[in-house]
Image (tube, rainbow, N blue to C red):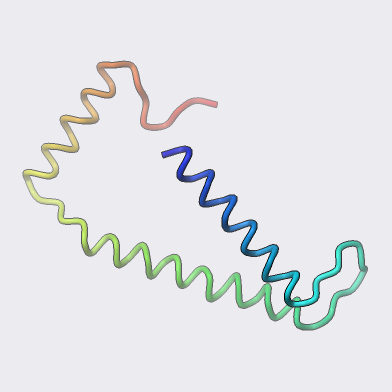
Length: 90
């Protein structure tokens, strides 16, 4: 889980960097071209909506019934018994 999260964050940062570079962002300048501001607005608004939509679609496909709930509960109990945590301490 941690590897997947870190890899997706790295990919997102790289993608945002590429998009800003294509929009004309120049590091160190006190002001940027207007396209940079528009690109940031698009990333923050449309990107957020796209990620929310993906999460919604995935949640619709995940069926939580008595059987799957039992499987999830059994697995978490196994992890706790083995001393593993769902939320690792930093």
